[in-house]
Image (cartoon, rainbow, N blue to C red):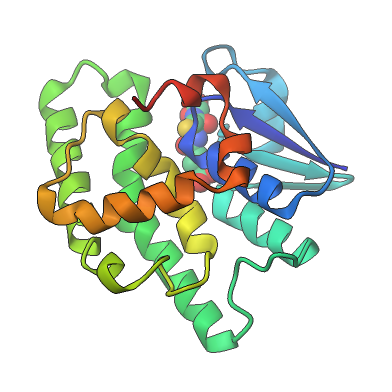
Length: 203
Ligand SMILES: N[C@@H](CCC(=O)N[C@@H](CS)C(=O)NCC(=O)O)C(=O)O
């Protein structure tokens, strides 16, 4: 059975919980207290971060790598496109999301930066602007890649869920992105994957 070591408020862990519930297979989630990290986290992951997935002698870290493994191991419903070209494009988008957006999300998640108001404001504004740039895509599309729910939606969802919590206000022009977010939030797997601490993040 797969075991996921997961942070109860960690957006990267939420991505993996979301995929596990989408697949509807057997798994165990171990909640990790990030303020009092067990020693075995750094033994399993040299970077000391969660999520970490363990299956027999396989140990994986990095949420996108974990999610691609789960997707290949349990192909239904398939979250990465079957076509090699679309699959490669999706990987490139995933990479770009990390570099353009989630590197900033990591700043908001980093407790040591909580007192640096100037940095936090700058970071919130960057995320707001990047999301506003993506919003027009959602005028025509139900999901990031078109009509089909995919790994791109999984990756993005924890950030969209945390906008209020992070203090990020999107402009009115980003309304299509908000509607798109509601479509994801209504998925049974998304709701099941929420921890009690995540449930209260959104009003
Ligand atoms: N790029 C990583 C980011 C994981 C990450 O930053 N996790 C944070 C929690 S949200 C963590 O474990 N922090 C603990 C620490 O840095 O000590 C991924 O996608 O898995």
